[in-house]
Image (cartoon, rainbow, N blue to C red; front, side, top):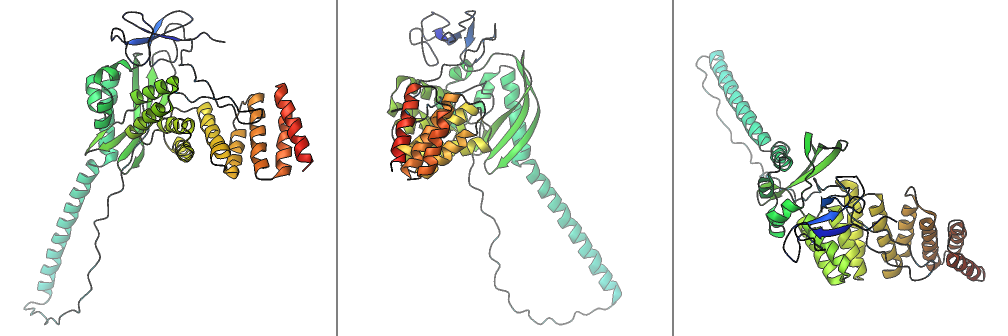
Length: 411
């Protein structure tokens, strides 16, 4: 087992949690357990020796009884959060109106043509000039609209933001956050949460344009690391393009989880979602908070939203985080809402995750068997119990399987 990562004040050395030291107000740092090098809170790997210094996962809720549920891997962030998810506004209504009822044309007397073909030629010339003027005006309008379109404007804003961040001009970058993000996070907090590893960016492109939101991708090159493709989003914030930023709110949510305070967990997670409603990670924290607060319907809704957003938008959630969300959703279906069919669907989806440990697969088979049994689908329940026997290594799980198979056979 790896040694625990300690968080201490860089100024006075006192242990702490959060963003700043409660004793002296100094910045907190992560101390590498391998070489004792002090790293910023944003780090997941030691700058000196490369040892993982990611925050330890929260303890999972223990199953109620053998076969009573899946051990839930804990959701957490991974990687430096240099780009995030998206927000949208409703599309603008069309300017086109209903055409009026056509009126019958009035009889018009034939014009007097003193010179016949000459008058017609003058009319054609005038019409050509008028059409040319209209085309020129249309081209001008199209050019103006294009130059003001999100696909043109937002990359320019994103370039300014990335240039400011990569050069350490955090004050300028801070002004480009949404109004709500700046209310939630001070400039000092924003500065302290920055990864100080030198990095550059290149190849910025628009990935997705939505009403009120633009997602961009770019190549991120950090010193000593391979170049990766990262994403960033800007949203329409009261008429200007700005970046939603929920990192401090997510840190506060994690602190509430560590305190095991269900009401505070829910409040902090909701604050993160309000700052960036389309961040899959924020939705995932709200899903987890609602689950432990025993708000079954809200847990189901937020888990489903989080999983959907993770399919459609940039996210730092990895396979173990997604597995965790499926596990929360499945357990909410099975025990809190008794929607057994949906529970079976979630357990089946989890079966498809790669590199699963035998005990995890054992737990899945036993949980899915329980859902099948609740639906009185005896054959499927017995098959899952029998299949689970091959993966279950704990004696009490084997005893549970034997007892359930005996009970089902007597039905």
